Amino acid sequence: MPPESSNKPISLTIIKTACSNCNLRELCLPLGLTDEELHRLDDLVSNRRRLKRGDRLYSFGAPFDAIYAIRSGFFKTDVLLEDGREQVTGFQMAGELLGLDGISTEHHTCNAVALEDSEICAIPFSRLESLSREIHTLQHHFHKVMSREIVRDHGVMMLLGTMRAEERLAAFLLNLSQRFTARGFSHAEFYLRMTREEIGSYLGLKLETVSRTFSRFQEDGHIAVQQKHVRILDVAGLKALMNHRG
Amino acid sequence: MPPESSNKPISLTIIKTACSNCNLRELCLPLGLTDEELHRLDDLVSNRRRLKRGDRLYSFGAPFDAIYAIRSGFFKTDVLLEDGREQVTGFQMAGELLGLDGISTEHHTCNAVALEDSEICAIPFSRLESLSREIHTLQHHFHKVMSREIVRDHGVMMLLGTMRAEERLAAFLLNLSQRFTARGFSHAEFYLRMTREEIGSYLGLKLETVSRTFSRFQEDGHIAVQQKHVRILDVAGLKALMNHRG
DNA sequence: CATCCCGGTTGACGTGGATCAAGCTTGGAG
DNA sequence: CTCCAAGCTTGATCCACGTCAACCGGGATG
Image 1: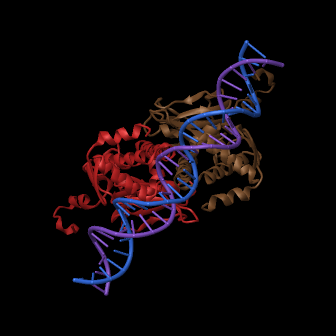
Image 2 (image 1 turned 90 degrees about the vertical axis):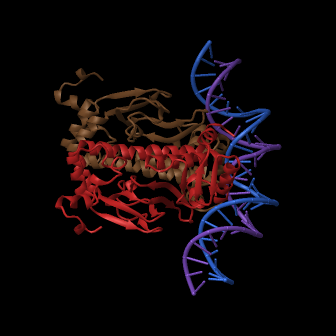
Image 3 (image 1 turned 180 degrees about the vertical axis):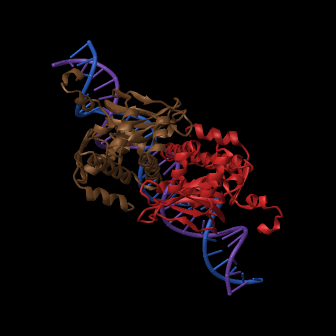
């Protein structure tokens, strides 16, 4: 909608998409900031971008200069080996940050691909660093976000290193469910944005194993699944699968 | 050596262990700081601690208030599942930081255990944050260190998710070799500080598989191994193992 | 000195998930 | 509408690694 459609100048600031009126601000970088601090952050994230399904937000080796907050949509990040093997390192949804991997070498070390039409906010990193030298809360929250990513990665290592196929997939579904819930969607019913192959790559399994395990969960009454549509019927049952060997 | 052994007052500052005279400063947090900045960091890391083999630096669930720089020694970090399964999430050596996992929730999310007698510098985290609000270089370097940890974790995911036993162990040995080299030790000959079981836990393998794979590498002339003593004979051979399926 | 115990090695065998292969379902293009 | 390609399911078979078990060697203990 063009600015002219508003008759009061003040409403311009409402139309302008910004952290201060973004409904993800409690999940995203602005968490905990005062109104005044929020407006300073607004200046920084003005650069917005739309991506279509399949578009790359950034690629391995690309120079790093910004991190990205997902405003809407769904992404995967992956690393490719020379021989073509792919490891999906994560799936990201609205309110989560992408690109933290690039800070280390000032080049991105993975690919970020939109799994559905998405919108992101680019946050120039050097400006984020200056602002967080002035705003303690922002600094601390950013550190927490990076640390949370490390903790998440440890969880994935646990999954890949010690769990069986059923446990991995159960953990995966419960994790998705919990993150959808945090965004106000149903905890029990959702569409998977990724293919069986991508799930398999993330979980260290082949797509056939993912498919078979879905079928087994359905036979056992834990879920109802039809292609990408999943309904969780028995959260407790899935949780139980995770804590018992065999 | 006691301070009295020095006859000039100025040498006291040399005897005092501090970042500014630590030979790890090019690997550790002080990287890139000016002398003046280095001295400000010195005030912060004065708290030092010795650990014996087997001692825990921190445990899962413990309140977080500091990160730790390893001055000497060798550590592992691990996560335990209720049913006793252990996932080693990393091995850390001199100059590396421990405890970054705790920033997120203000409680540690893994255990850090000394694998040999070690010495660490505790860095109160809130003081590190204030100092890095003042010293841009410190702030940026700290961000790089956290990002590097994320990138490292992605490498481990790749390893656990897509590689076969031989590739995992080859990658592990080459990584150790490279890190020892960076610390001025031989790249070709070193003692493993961890057991076969801990290596296995890190690599998502059972200790028997680790042992067998070591033996196979030895038969094939890639390494010479006797218990914890390893000599790498054929770096190129190990590298080749990593890039080919089968 | 003998004993114990922990960690490592090696062999025999079992199995979970990979591989190979054949349909099937769905959605987009013409 | 039909056709086609991409993605999903399911079955049969295989194999890398796990499991179980026996033994060994070295360092700590008494």
